[in-house]
Image (cartoon, rainbow, N blue to C red; front, side, top):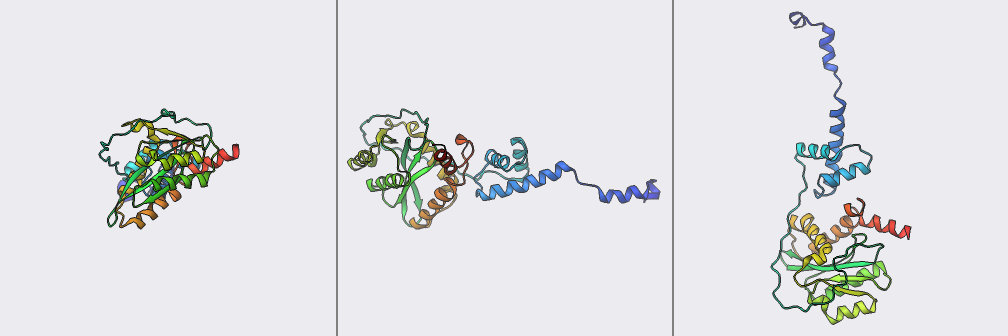
Length: 271
């Protein structure tokens, strides 16, 4: 063949030892790491968060490059949109809105927000998760999961937060106008801990947007991706998501792409 093509034999044999393109090799290495990060997040991370993780690990790459590699490999964030239940038509009494959509903070345990969300199970039907979030760290500082949506549910969620954080007097805690939060028992608990109550305006979810956002993230990244057999399987899954993923591993852009737990530790060291 070399004689027919008038090609030196050395050129023919050198073609078998051609070195791979360095950029191609770098992309292959980068893609393998992208796959690992995506898998570790259980498919929850899209390109922006994967890109941030790569930068933290010392990789030099652009967001567009990560997006291109993910698209070529068919990798994407596997999340489901939030279900929006029909709002209640029960008349409610307006109460003081201390927060007034001012979600800015200067330290931990300055402003907390709380709410209840619905979780469906096959055997035990609807169950309920009450969560308390610190606006400074975005950390879920307290929560309680129950088969019933009672005042006891929110009392235990708040008490768990107090025991874990031990906040100073004067902390603002913002909730909606649900009967659990406007109950005498809950208001008495706030007084005992010297907390300031703040309430959303009727029909205005934006007043409590941060905890609404957390519950939306919880639904998209965990709840709507599976079917829980019963209350206990749902309880374990929520515990793993909140304690094992959200607080300790999931990075947040609003706090410099670190986890809520890391950011809280940084704040306590700086205090």
